[in-house]
Image 1 (cartoon, rainbow over the protein chains, first blue to last red):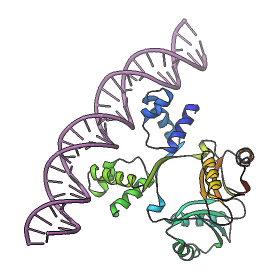
Image 2 (image 1 turned 90 degrees about the vertical axis):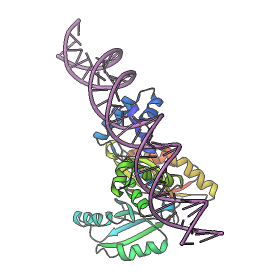
Image 3 (image 1 turned 30 degrees about the vertical axis):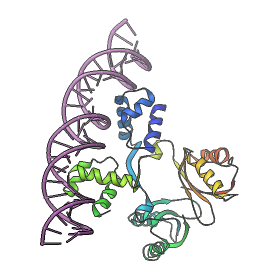
Length: 138
Length: 138
DNA sequence: TACATTAAAGAACAAAGATCTTTAATTCAA
DNA sequence: TTGAATTAAAGATCTTTGTTCTTTAATGTA
C-alpha cells in the first residue's frame, strides 16, 4: 500500500460513490489503475464494505444514547452471549467490548427519552447478566 | 415515505453499491421508480451520504479509544469551534456533542496506546479550550 | 544482458445511472 | 359522478461507469 492507495482510501471513506475517473484526475491517472488499486484493496479486506448513512432525525430516530453496560459475570461465554444478543437489536447501532471500568459500550438510537427507557426496561434489563447501565444522552 | 422506501433504506444501509435494477427485482419494479425514490430521499436529506468502511486492523488502526472531552467554556461559539477543529482530524472517526457530565464524545482510532497518547498530547491537549479528557480503551 | 514482474494506458463491451415521454392509477374538487 | 390534476411506474434513449483485455513502459532480479 503506497501513498496513492492511502489517499484513495481517504477519498472513499468520505464518498463511496465517486467515480474512478474523478479519483484518477486527482493523481493524473486514468481510471484503470484506480480500478485495479481499489479492487486489490477490496480483495485484501482493507476495504470492508460500502454503506449508506441516513439522517436519524428524519427517520424517527431523534435521540442517540451512548450507554455503558456492566455485566455481573465476565467470562468469555457470558460476554459473547451478551454481545450476540444485543447485536440483533435494531435500536443498537454499535456495540463494543471495552477495557476499563465498564464492560460494553452501546450506541443506541431511539425516537425520544420515553422510547429509550422502554428499551432499557423491556429489552436491556431483562438480560440476566446485566449489573449496571449508565447513559449519556446526545 | 411508504414501506417500499423504508425497505430500500434498509438495503442501502447495508450496501451502498447495489444497483437500482437489483433493488427493483425485490419489489417487482423497474429501475426507474427505484431511482426516483432514492433521489427524492437524497434531496430530502433522509439519505445523508455514502461512505466506505475500512478494516481498521489492516490500515494500522488496531486500537479504538472512546474519549470524553470536557471543555472550559461552553458557549455555542466555543463548542462549534472545537467540533470544527476535531472533525478535521483523521484519527477522529466520530464526534458527538453530548448532554450530561461531559461535553464531547470522540471515537478515535490509532495504531496503539503510544499513538493515542501522542494524539492526546500533541493534537488534543493543544486545543485551548480543553478542560478534561477521559478515555475508554477498546 | 536477458528475463520476469508490475503499473499504467487505451480500446472495447456490458451494465449502470440519468433524462424524457407516455401510460395508468390515484386523488381531489366541482 | 365526472373531469382535471397529481403521482407512480414503465419503456426508450443517451451518457457515463465499471470491467476486461491487450499493449506498452518501467522496475527489479538472476
